[in-house]
Length: 243
Image (cartoon, rainbow, N blue to C red; front, side, top):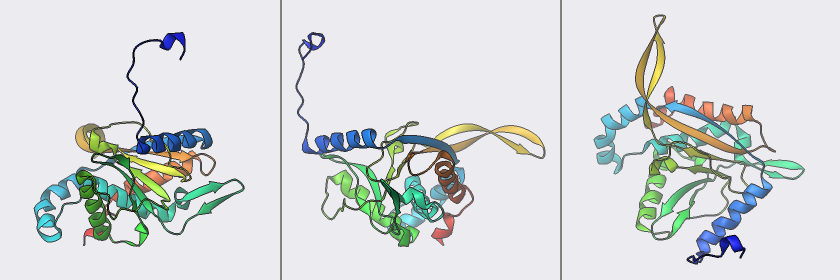
């Protein structure tokens, strides 16, 4: 310890999970050239639909999907048009994966941050996907990891909006190509144009950001992926799944 550090301190031992996270994040930041991009999504219509149909969904399905569930599902659907998102870098080549095995970061009670995996998410209907995500979330809140799978993830979504986060970027989980972060929905003044006149209206805006491996893709591809997610949500592509 240097002289500058010669002071009283409390030694905090790392738990096995915290040590594993530390090692993985160090590996990521020292081996993957990170770049990032972000956009905002107008989820006013989505918020309204959830409000109107919440009780019906609870009665019929047993739960009400969160805005994050819609966003994660849109993220999976958009991969069909942006395959590099679901890939890994291997020195002389890139491996593009046919299946999207989606890791979802969540805080597991009394255990810490974990990322259970929804395998072959691209084959699921919205309600199949949302039910699995709901069940994983409930198990995480209870600290129950039984039945959770943590292997073979090809892409990760990160829901820091659940904790009130409004901005920032996540660290990529090696050897994945990218990680999507969903932020807190906020009432935001937006300038719109109707009949040639501009006016300010209040909309529900959800920021999303993508950290990506710059060896695999450039900003155009990464931002195009986010814009595809926005289109699915704002123009109703995700709502088709509710029928």
